[in-house]
Each structure stands twice: as C-alpha cells, then as structure tokens.
Amino acid sequence: MVHFNGKHSFAKRRNDAHSTTASARVVSRFRKSAAVVVASAVLLASQGAATGFAAATPAVHHGGTIVDALPPLVDINWYMPLRPVAYNSLYDAWASSLMYKGLFHIDPNGQINYKRSIASSVRWNPQGTVYTVTINPKWHWSNGAPVTASDVIFTWKLIQAASAANAPAPWPYSGADTGGVPTDIKSFTALNPHTVRVVLKGPVNQMWFLYNGLADFMPLPEKAWNKYPQNVDKELAYLASNGNNASFFNVVDGPFRIVSAVQNQAWTFVPNSRYDGHKPNINQFVFTGETSDAAEVNALKTGAVQVGYLPDYMYSSRSQLTNDRLFTSYSFTIDRSILNFQSPTVGAILRQLPVREALQMGIDQSSIIKDLYNGLGVPGTGPVPLHPSTFLAPGLNKPLYAFNPAAGKKLLEKNGWHEVNGVMVNSHGQSLSFSVQYPAGNTTTQAMVQLLQQDWASEGIQVKLSPVPFATMLQYHHQPTKWNIQTGLGWSYGGTYPTGGGMYSSTGGYNFYGYKNATMDKLIAATHQPRATTTQSQQALNAYELFTAKQLPNLWMPVPMGLGEVARNVHGVVRSANPFTNALSPQYWWIN
Image 1 (cartoon, helix red, strand yellow):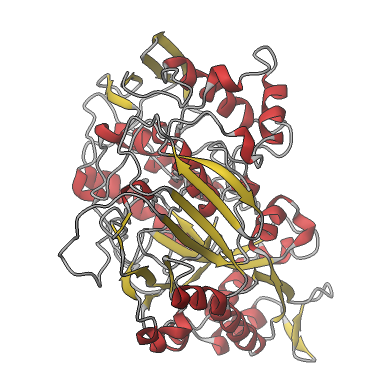
Image 2 (cartoon, rainbow, N blue to C red; image 1 turned 180 degrees about the vertical axis):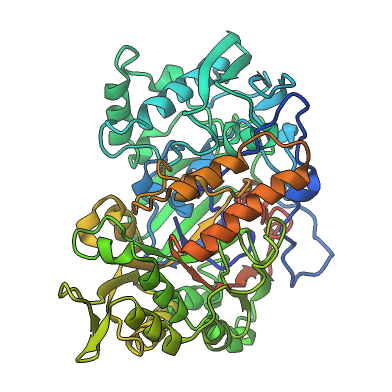
C-alpha cells in the first residue's frame, strides 16, 4: 500500500498522503502460473543515494537529542500502523514506523532484509497461492511478551474488518484492496506460535504479493489491545478512539516509543529499552512543527533543528546555512493534482476527458521546474515517476500533454464550451469554475498555484485558490462537498510495485475521489496476472501506465529534487536513508 512516504531519503519534504501511505506501500502484483517468475532485484533497485556528504564518518557517540523539522503547518495526527484514509500521511506513517515493525524490512536495494524483519523467512508453492511466513522468535514487545503469529492474525482480522464499506468511522482502511489484501485472501491462519499460512483465492506473482500485500502488515500487540475479541467492529472503534492518544502506545516492538505529543509543536520519542534490533544511539528524537518555511530555516540557523529541509525558493541562499550540510536526491514519488469526481457541483464536469485534458495542457511544468524549483526537478508524465525510471513505460519520458493553453481552449470549444466574460460555459449553464485547495504555509506551493490560476484563466478556466492546513485536506478526502481540486500533494510508492491498484481501480482503498473506468480496472488487473517473464510483466505495466497517463485520473505535476539539511555534528542520516521505501531510521543517527 502506498502509505509510507517516509521521506528521509532526502527527497523534498512534500505533503504526501500513502500512503502512506507507514511503512506505506502501494503495491501491486504480477500473478503467476505454475512456473512463477519472481521479479529480479534489478527491477526493485535503489532510487539513488543522496549527494553532498563526505565519505569520512566519525565514531559513533551515544546520547543527546535530535530534532527533525516537519513541513509548515503539518501535524502528526495518528500513531497507529493501521490507518484510515484521513490519516494516511507520510508523517503519520513515520510516527508509527518508529514504534512498530513490519513483517518485512525492504532495503534501499529493493531486497527484503530478514535481519531487520519480523519474519525470518517466507516460502510459497509453485502456483503462488499458498504463503508460509515464519516469525523470528528474537522479537519481543516492550512488555517482554514475544511477537507471535497470534499478533499477525489479530492484525489480519482488523485489516479485513476495517476494509469493509460499512466499517465504523473513521474507517475504511486506507490500504484496502492494495496488494490483494483483503480481497484475494481465502484464509489466514496460525500453524503454531511462530508460523502463519496465507491461502489465496487464485495464483499471484510472489513479488507482487510480498511487496504489495504482506509487506503492509505491521503486527499489533494482540494481548495488550484486543479489548473486544468477540466484536471486531467494537474493537475497531476502540482502537480508532486511541489512534491519536499518545499514552495508548506503551506496548511497542520498534526502536522508539512516544512519550509526548503537543499538536502544532512537537512529538517526542525515546528509545525502547527492550528493542531487539539496533538500539538507538540518541536519548531522544523529536519531530517539531513549523509555522512557515522561514521559521524552519531560522531554526536550522540557530541550531534548534538538526535535520530539516531547504525550501526550493531559498536554494540560492543555501550558503547561509553554515552549520549544516546540504544533500539532494529523488525518491520513488509522483506529484499530482487530485480531481473530485464525486463532487455534487463539479464532479460531472471533471469526469469529461476533454476538460481534464485542457486542465493538463494549462500546467506549465517547465516554468515551474525552472522558476520555482531552480531547475532541480523532473516533469510528471504519468502514474510512475520519470526519475528514477525503473518501471517507466517507453514513451513516457516526456509529458503526453505539452503546455499549450491555446490548444486547450480550442479543445474545450470543440466539445461544447464557449467563453462568457472570460469563463467557459456550456449549453447547460455550467461553468468551468473550480476551487483549488493547497497546503498552507509553503511559499513555493503558493507561487505554483498562482501560476496555475493564471495559465488556466487563459483557457477560460476560473479557479479560486484556497490555502488549507495539510491535515484538513486529508480530512476532506471523504467529504465530496468540501473540495473540487487539491494540489501540492505527493504520492510515495514506498517500496512497492507501482500498478496503481489502490489509487485508480474502482475499488481502490485510496480512490477516495471516485475515478471509475472499466478499461482501467482491466489493465490494473492484468498487471497482477501470472507472467512467464519479468519482461511480460513490464509489458502489462506499460499498457496500464500509457492508458493512465492519457486518461488523467488526476493531473500530473512536476516533481522537485529533494533539498535536505543536516547539522554538521549529526551523522548517520544519509547513510541510513532509504529512497526506495522512504523509510525513516533515526535509531542509526548520532551526535558527535
């Protein structure tokens, strides 16, 4: 599932939602037949290392506090690994991943590292229908109890119930129908305290199911949390009532535990003394809230923040941060403007492809990259990132829709729209007038939406700009009357195979905007089917990508290179970065 947009890959700190994205993956699968071909590790290669650091590394020291800055006006609102759509942000995922471990840990090279995984192994039958997962007995909860198959089964039952359409608020689960979970699962049972068996309804490609399905499991402490064992809906409601209650999370199996949460200000974590992995070097890790880009940069200058970011528009002033080191990188992320196809006022208009095409032709990606991102970025061309190009379909190395407002206006006129007082209207009296929400507090994003407003106006498309706190934008996702278009949002694939099942299929758990297309559903399903070779798997993915790029279920936006800042006396940040999954690992950081 795409939820763990854990971006300390030193990609730009965008307001990303998969995804959430906690571990966060958007995983899709290639199903396979009798002779299953597992995708090679080359296909799942690292997205590239961050640059800007010397090779020499000082000795590890212990103690101290490291403060990490969040983007402006961003809060952490949910600490539980199991997340509804409204809390499926990168930052919520970071918090939960500090406290809870996944079944599988995926390294920057795209391979499963079993030394850092709850699972010690996984094996499957040739048809790809039965998966046996063995849990490493070394892992324990902070109360001393072992992590067992019972915890995994408890988590499965919650995912299954939380994915239902009638699940109690704030569910459904954001990862519903991603990686075949729960739709493709026939049974999920414990064979013994350290072995789980998953039986699927049909054959799938193992790589897809591992990376997009099972890797999304973060076992939860069944004995500590299962208050209503006979009523899963009551259990879901109980857990949801504690999702943002920091004091609830006192039984963890990850490297840290949360000890303080002050909204809009700071979220403080301390080491889990009973952690069975690499114990943190520092005494305290803090996420700090920021009121603006300027405030964050000032905190870097004064040393109040040790790990942060450099806003794009301040790139020319980078030499002023003399106490920090600058790094740059990309992560496996796309940026997009989301369209509300379920809006009672504009949904029917946005469902018209010519309208979406005109909107896309009114986005000057080149100018945004050149003037706002200092030339450090790549255009958005479709549902898979242009950089790195690991899974990119041939033909999508540049946008299918070039910036051309004049052509966009002619397209609208050809499809029944005509201009009245500067705004396009149709024979039904409907007008191309939309509200555009964007995350408040980010100067670069504000300049970008103003450019969009200007260029769309030249096509006769009128937009009203509405800055909204990031958390509020997420809360609006399941409220069709609250928004028309949202922009300034990124999407991290979080180490998964990018078939888009969670985002663009009719039943996708993160398809909150209501995009429906029968051909899209078929093409996504085809990427999950058994293939004899990885080349054939990529061909199925290419067909999906090209269709999606043309159909515009959302608008493709340029992706800036990430600009990160680390204090010169803080180490291990870049070395432990994972641009493939966007995971955050401050247990490997230290101060010297």
